[in-house]
Length: 425
Image 1 (cartoon, rainbow, N blue to C red):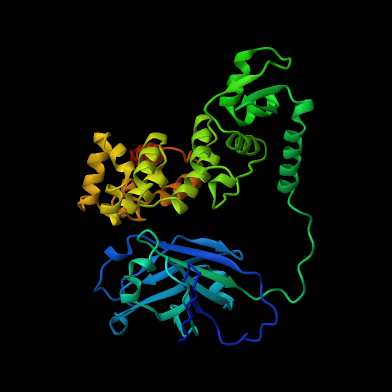
Image 2 (cartoon, one colour):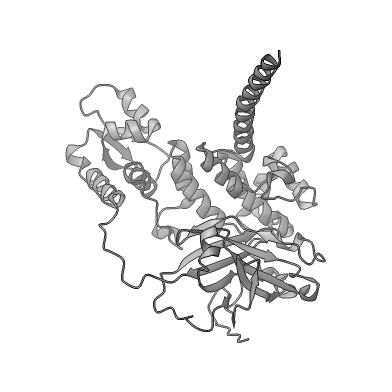
């Protein structure tokens, strides 16, 4: 094993790579699969063979998931964490697709790397290492991200012997650029003018009618088909309104800056997206806040924001952070503001004293209301349902969908039984 520590790095990289090319002359580009194993410290400590499976992600046209054995693959490895890449596809097993793998664990500590060969295969469908990481090392707080073990697997598979045929760029890319050009030319050809913080913004009413009902209502209230007078919009920043229009026209999401003074503020973008009903942009800003903006001094305020704007992921992430950093969060100025809400304060006290039940990724373990928000979103998206709303709203949406399906099949089953009875008569 080789360990390397860098003075400025913020990630640890644990690599598992094959020792040779296996006769492969050219490899594909790298595609990454990620597994997030939340509340890692609370998992069973003395259960060798206990396995966690990440969500399935498609890479190189094949489904992949990451298996983690937090207590070791078997009794002999109880002091180590096993990590494996699993390919449940019949094609992947039948063709014996070789892979180049590099596993990375995202952490909050200095850079650390380890290299070892893949020497283990499980059931013919998973490759990895029994001794990926000593369990005691993984229990260090700095090895986890908001209490979760985050594992990335960078995957390469054998590429074709000849380079792939050239194909034109996606029509979606061309369409997006065309829509942004249309927005840019709205000052001359547009029929709508908004005034935000003293600056004029031009748009097209028919685009707004299709893409943003809330903005179109402001225009429609003015009336008439001719170019209306300026429509003022208050309590909105120029940068955030620019982001909103670019999303409305081209589904463009902002590039966040590490310094908020150099770019749009994710909190302000979330609020304007919520105000004007742009759910996709709201979810992007919510994910940015949940991933990169939760700290001891911000967690309480973000819990309040998430509760007010029905941001399920942000609230879940901030509450989990609070559970791991109770004293620090309660010492912040934001906690005083949170304390003014008796309902949220009661919820936080229950979390702080361990009253909350653990979250899970399986409906059989306690229903939709105890599932992670990311899992709920995946299920909602699969069913073509709306992703916006609090966790309670999301769970209700799935429960209602289940009830409708059960009703349909229940009625069908009843009819079949009646038909069978008729046949017997």
